[in-house]
Length: 313
Image 1 (spheres, rainbow, N blue to C red):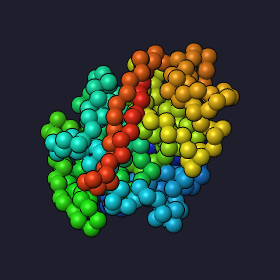
Image 2 (image 1 turned 90 degrees about the vertical axis):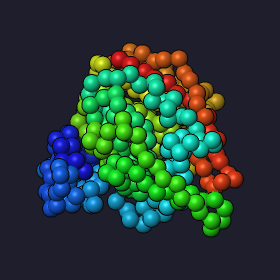
Image 3 (image 1 turned 120 degrees about the vertical axis):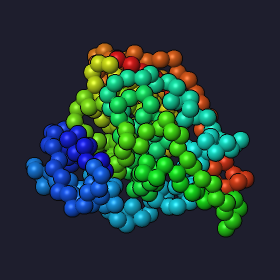
């Protein structure tokens, strides 16, 4: 973890109170903390930094639960690497989604946060339009992979062909994507370890239907995003599922109740409501949509329509 990030971090256990974390550094190299501990002076919580990866998810301490998480497997990491970087490989099956999303953000001073960053594509691409970018995800395997790309700028990826057959491709980051302007942390979108009003850009791509409290995610977005000169990009397929969140937590996909109807319309209304929870109100763009793909093997792809909005204030 880049050492300069310490000044931005607060204890996610103590929210909504904000207590700065201090760093006990055991090993440091070229401004990166390789091994150490982040400590809260209030609740005494300790968050390890291991092999450069800071573990700041207050809900992600159960090792058995982590081991059972599909997002920690090599096969899923490989699928997401193709989904993020297949376009760079010239794969004619690749999605153009990340290029479409990146084109929606206007250049702006300040720090960006990519919530649900996975293996890092959007965070890397955002380095061209702001001062610094932080990508967060609950998957340790995703964050380790993103940090490997950050440090080495290339990665050999074994793609599943069929059964036990694999073929290797090499992902190389474009020179315009700056490794010195990005960092990746294990953190939770429902309890972000950052001070309020820290970020001028916030992105949430294919995440809001994957968290136990979608409204909690939007509240956290609003807490850490600036009141003025800020942008928010949300894209999602709205695949609501009771495996992730109870129906009463959904922000759409229901026939009745406060959030009856479609999720994107409801979130747009929440953002633009000048007397609602997400004030100051946002100016929301006309919705768009983009097709996003996940590759399982050479003969199997999952095609997902992700609908998006870009908002400013």
